[in-house]
Image (cartoon, rainbow, N blue to C red):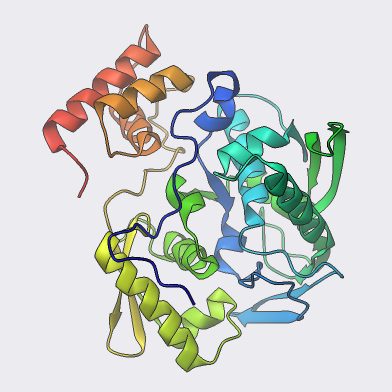
Length: 348
């Protein structure tokens, strides 16, 4: 296993720090994931084809995940699901009708999820579509207030509408499963930090997902190492799992790279998540003023006046603070961010 130099951030580089103004809707969408797959180990941590059938049971709920010939869908394949859910939730928040079918440009997904846009990036995306469509889930977990026995693919189908002559896909159409779409319709989703896509290791991503689901906005949340291993879906021995988690904790203590939560050990068998105070408030506040999001240029200017802060977190703080729609949304938002930074400085 390679070891990063101590002065190098464990995060992947931000490949696209300045959003493309022509795809601003994609980059303006707050990252969202359904709560059920955050809580339960739907996705494999493996980086090589994983053909094991896995079953997870907890508090009367169970989920059984079966691979196709291509292997189980991985934690990194989840990027596709997050991208689709995020854009559907943005449409719902903007008062638009949505359906299970999501159509988009592959290039936009690659940029929004911090992936490479070369041939390797497109090939990896096509492989992700195949694993997502091939992985079958059997479960009784409730979504949208409905408990039924279901067997389904994470996505029901994918259609590549057009490819370039060199084989790179351009337009893609994905149909989400009924299970996922019910969660979207009932707002059973959580906002993720945008640095989620910069986490290198599958286990890092899974640990953050569990912290986001269970710690939320609490100051602190604890879980036994054995239970954490179960929720992660790790097939390592407990000793090896402790070593892997310990390595992530050591890097986080040096770089604070895990979004939203600091992770540490309490003794040998307890893992502690402590909030960094960056988790945004819910979009569902009844007092929130209804108005469109700032433009991509507005977000860009906000990054300039409030360096180091997640502008999507600041947008939520701004929405909670504002009492009536401003005449100029971009100017009002940037002004709020400027005052925020003047008062608080760089995030700790």
